[in-house]
Amino acid sequence: MSSVINPVAICARGIRASLGQTEVLRGMDMALPAARWTSIVGPNGAGKSTLLKVLAGLLPYQGEVTLLGQSLATLPRRERARQLAWLGQSEVSGDDLTVWDVAMLGRLPHQALLGAPSAADHAAVEHALKATQAWDWRARTLGQLSGGERQRVLLARALAVQAQVLLMDEPLANLDPPHQADWLGLVRTLVKQGCTVVSVLHEISMALQADEMLVVAAGRVVHQGACIDAATHRALEHVFEGRIAIHALGAQWVALPIAPPV
Image (cartoon, rainbow, N blue to C red; front, top):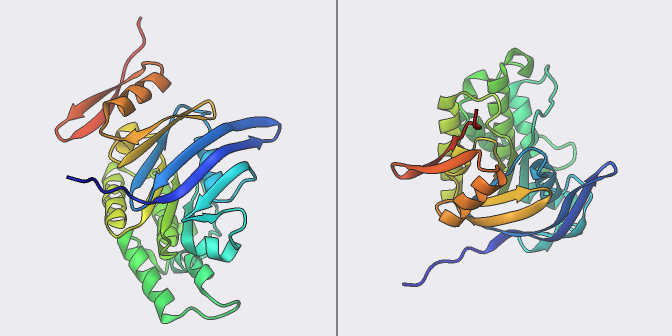
């Protein structure tokens, strides 16, 4: 029986990037498959968020990045904004904007300059707000929402883009367990529809629910493989210096912390 190999959505070769005078990424190579969910994990300071910003075209870098077969460096910004949606950490939006208006910002790449939103824009925003269970707040301002509610609205903004690739940096921040589970279901639905999802997660057990995992440490790729593979589990345990252990829980894998010796 032949296996199906997904085409590559994002390819990176020799990626180096610095924050100030500090080199954070030190020659990263990767090929992230299309229509799959890849989680990026690693210890604090590994370069996870910096890598995601480079892949989104938000930070300068050395090396080569391609998005859906096109060079990220030469791809027009408007075209990139249609193909790739971004949800960052602790994003700031105007507290006086309504939830509807925040989500509508995701449609800007599809609108003519100074043009009014189309029926397709309205339909996309409605769908995104309902998918994130934020529809009932559409007339409220962002300043009236809790941290978890704001995060769901910002996710709706990213979904409203209807991009082929969705990059998310710590998307579970401020979400309680039920809404983390809702996020997981939403990601799986997006992937089934052909979307490519790449997420940086601190929640290792949640990251293990992805299709693929990119394990990074000290600005380098340590391992890339399927989340169900034993080699991926060993790489995870190694980069966290034996302080976690990967165990099977039914049909899933979970990461359990290991206390240091007394």
